[in-house]
Amino acid sequence: MADLRREFPIFQAHPKLVYLDSAATTHKPACVIEALTRFYAEEYATVHRAIYRSSLAATDRYNETRETVRAFLNAPSSDEIIFTRGTTESLNLVASSYGRTHLKPGDEILVSEMEHHSNLVPWQMLAEQTGATLRWMPMQLDGTVEVNITPKTKLVAIAHVSNVTGTIHPIADIAKAAHRVGAILVVDGAQAAPHLPIDVQALDCDFYAFSGHKCYGPTGVGILYGKKTLLDTMPPIQGGGDMIERVTIEKTTYAAPPLRFEAGTPLIASVIALKPALDFLQQAGFAHEATLMPLLEQGLRTIPGLRILGHPPKKGPLVTFTIEGVHPLDLATLLDLDQIAIRTGHLCAQPALRKYGLDSAARASIGLYNTSSDIERFITVLKRSLVKLKPQ
Image (cartoon, rainbow, N blue to C red):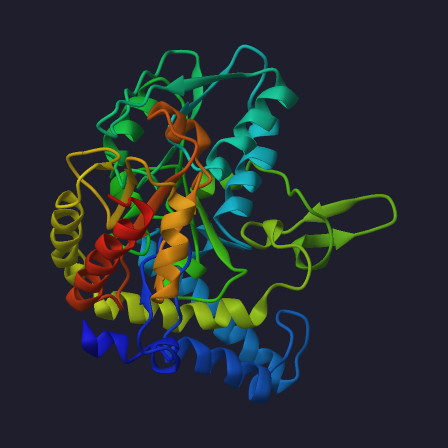
């Protein structure tokens, strides 16, 4: 929508830019940039550790963001919201803290075959460290997965929305199946949080992770939601700063969650600027992205030799594709000459691409600032680029 596009200074600086890589990271609205600038220029202070007025004000604003995130996820308590550096760190926190203390040899970790590496590698490492067995939920070519939970399953990890096929997985149903055998469910929400209303109570997941930078917020800040009953059983994975309750030479006791998991001076400015980002996202809503997806897919289907990966029943606003006889890197290079930005490569999901017999693909993903004109120009320039790449 043109009105939303005006909220993003990047498009004033580069009016011809067609940015179709929001699944990787999003541009920032003026309200987020202004919040960062204002905090560093006029309000900067540490949090939690001092009684002077600027520190108290910064602490209040830091805590306001935690409450905003709680409401954004409909979590029962702000004590269940942990600030991290991003989805990757959030998932690693669960693996390193919950996983190492709760899993043992013979237990099964169940991961879908279409996961982003951030929701695969930590579980591989955990299996090696604990002697647990890592097992796959097989991926089908339509982009769905077979949920094959067994009585040995203790932890299930899956993306809410796939970053390759856009599949929206039935998280609430998977949670029921996991809980039926006493397993917990860890959800990678990196691709879902910017595009879907999230209700962790309705989903009944045990952990939910997402990143600020994909939600029009700053880089370097992420979220981990965890059920309080689980967080209370988990040890910290870093020591120092605000994660302590009491320290003596002989022993340290730890703060209650969430501070138990937030050692050291946090990314104060990024956390504070996450609040206007989430407020902006909720005010904008998600409807206009849904209107652009049919235009994008219809346009791509007019191109001979183009293959879209996956056709799931419910899908987020991204399309991954290949074109016969064209390398994705060559395609993206030509598109960039016309200021059109798409993602190419293995998409940090090599097992998923191998399922389609690929080691590289192209992906176009939609954000709040995209318009129907963007889609039309992308398709036009794509067809023109193919004339150069596939001479008759």
